[in-house]
Length: 274
Length: 335
Image 1 (cartoon, rainbow over the protein chains, first blue to last red):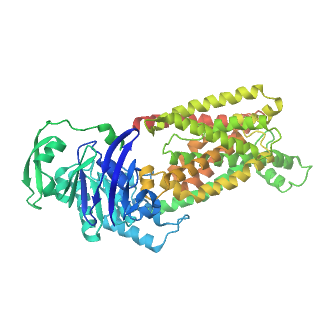
Image 2: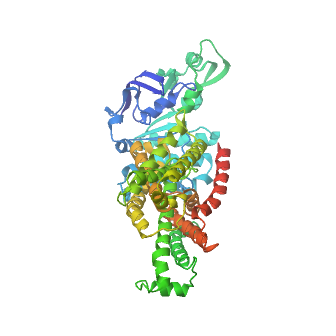
């Protein structure tokens, strides 16, 4: 399952945020979008999931324009977990996960055996089986995030997109979520595309890093190829030391000062609206 | 214990149905002429007899009145449940977002412009007015691309008040016949007859089952745009259908009982507490609670100081307005 963009232009209201983007997502791998606030990474992710229509150009799913595919068909091929998703009050975990079967159900919503199996599988994969009947509001942040991931898993899509899945989680819950995604990638062959804020987590868990700045992809490749002093300085405006992660051999950066050599293109409002 | 609670939720619908039947039968005995339960039952068995005064009172006055009240209360409540879910705003309710007053105003216009119009013209005209008013409120509430719940409520209340004032102004100047035909628009079930039931019922029989069938889509819509779309919902179409449905339910109800203040707000909120926010339970519970609320209010309206009548809408507003204020405070604080 291939996901790519072809000369993609994206924006909100009168403002262009992403221009002339040609991006190809490696199938079966974990790709992580990084970049400063307002660089357009969330915007790109949303457009990959057809949540934001292009101004120009196209997002291609297996060579077909994603905007022209029936949206239910797309929902069986890619699932996206938006930032801070909201559920109607009083839903239990299991009820939430059942909504992941929506693209498979007929207008009258009959439940089939394969629906049931997919829901059980999604709960088991995320370790949420024991919490199935708990109300979403009663869960911790990490458990709630896993419940949402379970809903996306119930869609049984080869591609999983996540917009900052670790934001607002404490460190152990962040790792819990990231390890879950690694396992889904390794054992179930899922293509994972996500936005992360923490560069070292990105370096550690990504097969492919996609560095976005000012609405453009300025580097794409293995973390060891992409993360270096120059990128940190030019994209993030930081001076940093680099070490090697003793466990993975990946680069590990320790920023120690701001490097305001060239002005950064930072527009917080755009990112927040995205 | 969990299973027991789930079972309780399922039992709530039959319990509410039973409650509605009990309230309805009790309401038959109340009014300027009081009847005991035995007298009510005896009169019910004697409906065909034109000489039986009790039977005539029940058949000509109280039965249509209770049925119209229950039906319109149910429709207001279902409308509120749908609007609150789709707009994702706990303050949304047909009489808060301008729909009810828009429908009332349009009903007046319809009757002035087309005095000879058939029975169905009034509800259809009201739906048109309700939808125009809702679009107006919604457009006025958009600021930098999004609609804040409080803003929608404030602008909605202002538009609702303006349209309602306009309606009263026009009714003052209108022919006596028109004014008399539409006095009920102030929100009273007084004078509801079988004709009014036949005017509302066909629309109710179309709209209510449609809402029940669409329960799953309503659920998905209430997740908000991003999640609904990523689940494969055709967002624009789905939202349009749901809003049309919510607006039509309340607009038709206005042609039955006028604006019964806050029924569309309180009933779905109470239903959500009883059975959760999933529409396959929320809609039936809202319908039943709305019906019970209005029948009780209307029974009090004619039973408190007989033979004088208080508009039922006054009583529902007395209960609903404080709750609305409480809700405004809570939503305001949450932001």
